[in-house]
Structure formats: structure tokens, C-alpha cells
Length: 361
Image 1 (cartoon, rainbow, N blue to C red):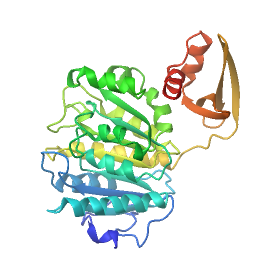
Image 2: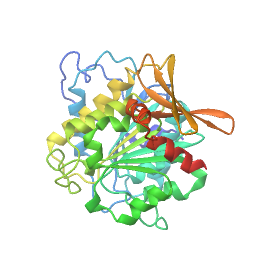
Image 3: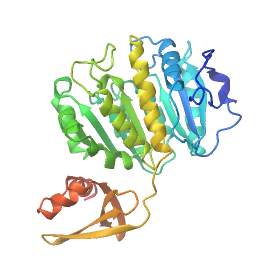
């Protein structure tokens, strides 16, 4: 089956300025998925939610994106068009799974705009990884009843409780206490998965970088944005602002392993300014993917802590940090921050080190 049969092109007769993304955009419908290319897909559906969703926001954000200018980008970008659910959800999901699988097998990078986080679960299933790590940005921890079919409120439960899909790490950023049952925080803690609440996140946005560096999928519920920055039925007065979410997109794009990004939209009650924010988020992700630095040689720093010697590594080229740990005779690296090293010098054991050993021992 030709997976492109299910896709509708983004019709656009707008005349873009010279040198803009819209002038140099690769055509719709590639003949085949190619290694390392970036593929942008819009989704019009209401799978996993009670809200309706129209194609208008997809048209608006695409136009906003193509008005921007590239920054010496070398990776080809393909417009896959829009996948519409129609009346047959099973056929829609089959086509979606086939598209994800084709991009993953050819080591392409998928950017999905639209649909709910129920589709993030389907991206997760299609990841071509032995063990999978997932990050999400969400004001709520989506841990509702896993006995129900996958939806926007229980997709994380399905990831956790289905061992055949091999979830190794899960991290959520930006949760808000008033919108979460305390039991859900306890569940994540018991499983040694991590949640960085909104307050801690905005104190130091750089905290997300090590987690994103070690992940394969980032799922962003746009309901995590403050209503002042993004207007839909899901947003609240608190939440992330535009600068913070664009900063997170840049950290995500710098990850060598993260090759799937989902910007989830629950409904179409959205202002034109929101289309501009979606465009900028995608721009920062793509720009970072085109400017990733290889880590190259590393310098070792050894810290004695009680009976343990902790080894920290710093890349001379990218300036990124890791902790080195020994597990069953093999050496593994845990992404971390310079601050973890500084804290260890003061006698404080790094939280990331503790979480790692709690999970395996």
C-alpha cells in the first residue's frame, strides 16, 4: 500500500518573500522516505478526545512557518501534507502507523502538528529502539484508567503498563499541582519516572536538556501553555510562556537521539497568534537539528563520595556533561548538568544518579 494515498496536500497560493522557507520548500509527497530528512505532517482528527478539530489551524500555522527564514539549514524538509481521520478511525490509525514506521525505519525525523496525545502513544509504539525514552510537556499527568482504549488522558498509562513496548525512561515537564491527583505523582515516583513541576521548570529551564538529550520522543500538549500565550479550551492562567517553550524546542532539537516531535492540539478554538507560536516552535527545533555539535573528546572529573568514586565527563566540543556508572561490568553514561558536578563536590549525591540505581537495584 502507498502510504501517501491517505495524505492531502497543503494547498497554498500565498506568494512568499525571496529567501523565505516558503520559497525554497521541498514539494509535497516524496517518492520515498530518505535517511535523515525532516518530515512535517499535519493531522486533522478528534481521535482520543471529545473535541472537534478543523483544518484551519493547520493552514494558518503552515503559512506562518513558511513566512520565516531558514538559518543555513542543510537537512531537506518535506511537507507530507495532512492526514484526515474521516469516518474510519481504524483506517486512519493504520495509515498513521505506516507513516511513522516508514520514517523511523529510514531514520528520518518526524514533526507532527495536530491531534491529541493519543497519537503520541502510536508514535511511541513505532520507535525503532531497543529501549525507549519519552519526554512530555503537560500540565496534567495522563495516567487515567489504562483499561480504556488509548486516549489523551491515559496514553502514559498505556506506555507504562505494556512491557512489550519497552519504555525505559519517562519524564514530564510543566505539571501543575491543582490539576493533578496526588496519587499520580506517587505512581511516577514509585516507578522511578520523573516529573519536573512548572515552578522548578521555570526557575531553570536548562534542567530539561539532559532528559531531552537521552530521549527519543517529545510530546507537547499545548494546554501546558499559559492562556496569555496560547488560547484554547485547555489552557489556564498559569503555564509556560512563548520564550520558555521555544527554548525547550531548541534543547530537543540538539538531541542526537530525539527524532520525533508531536505538538498536540485538542481543539481548533485558537487565535492567529497561536499559529505563529507553533511556527516558531518548529523553527527552533529544526534550526537546532541543523546545528547539532558532536561531543568529541571528553574530560574526566573524579569526585570521592563516601565509599564511591563518581566520575563526571564533560565534552570539550559541545560542553555537555555526563555521569559515568558501572552496571554488570559495563560502563554507561547518564546525561547531567554541570550543576550536578558542582553539587557533588559539596557532598550532595546527584538526583539523576539516585534515580538510575533505584530503577535497576
